[in-house]
Length: 533
Image 1 (tube, rainbow, N blue to C red):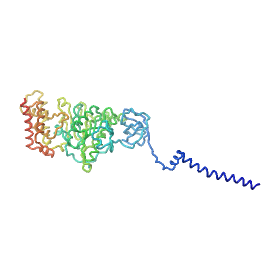
Image 2 (cartoon, rainbow, N blue to C red):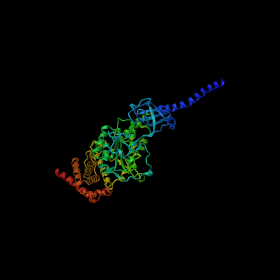
Image 3 (cartoon, helix red, strand yellow):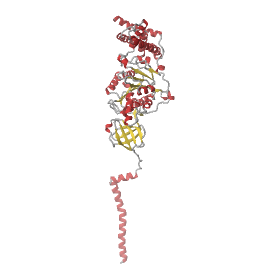
Image 4 (cartoon, rainbow, N blue to C red):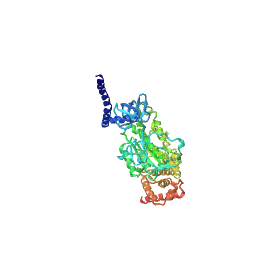
């Protein structure tokens, strides 16, 4: 009985071992193919290990009018752009232990305390290139004209100025189309010429007229409006469109209603766009209108960030803020692109106070200034350029020879006239020579008047100035002088002066025949008025 029991007991032992080993194995493969979750887990198990990404996340601890205080981003660097969870972007200005001072590049109403902030590992950049021509954008390149977004290469708004070895002398003139500027206060391509004056003295009009005069040239123009009203910028854009310069101009707008961070970045963005063109050999004209609002925006940011105030409550680095911006302009050597950047910064004074902090800073940074006097504005003298205060430290070397021959007599005549005019107000009896000087000075000052949006060609300016300095318009009233100038301009268009224009373009001086031709045409224009009288 024992063998039979052993055999019976052996069979049940062998069967359970053979059953569980073979049959469940087939069922597990079938179940794995049918279960998508198990299949996904199997795929992930055999997939390569993803790279670990470490992301720094900070928090907003304080929000002010255009600034925010952020903690938790210990590795952030200066001038880095941060991104808030709500989509707002900011610029790191202050690096302090345990906190960051961030200038918001947009409305601060959308930023909340406790909001997450992430690093972008990028500095503030702006799109550059030909795609910007004819567009109106803000300081970050976002369209403001309702057009399509601007795509293209980007460039950091902050850049180091070109070294001395990459620069070349300023030898070519920038024609502004304004008689008083081209003759007495010339500007060269690559120069930094400050336009300074009180409110409503014509600073913006002078800059816009200079842009409009580049219609027949290859110069690319950039107009940067900082702290300007929307209607004022709209007028400038309309003038560029009517003058046929919109397609070769870029308008960068940071209005008075925008965040101070955008106003601070705007001029640097304009200079970066200009550098993208100058590196390719183009000549660029940059108008910064105006640097007073730019300084105020930076002062606002600095005071909100608890920086110690200095003179007139401006921070101590305000000079460096403007110097590192304007030093990027200049005429560059051929191995550095061969282009040029001409900067026309505008600054506003109060009550003719040229010794204020920001005006004196910019006067010392730039290569000369064009001062617009409210005293001349009250006399209806436009452009209201005070030649006694205005100076160009570089442009005289780039001035056309024909203008150079006339400029000396022009300044001397006007300076003598102003002294005699003040003396003659006492009612003193004057001799014939003094009366002749007064008549000559009054005529020269009258011909320097020029309506806005009407820039003149070089030959037209030379004809008018040559006739005035020769005494052709002496004794005429201002109304008759204006009519004589209109007829002289028409006569120049009808006369054969192509050869004279060619010599002026070739930087040759005026011959006696040229002066005689100008005097003859001016005398004929005056004679018509004498007949009318």
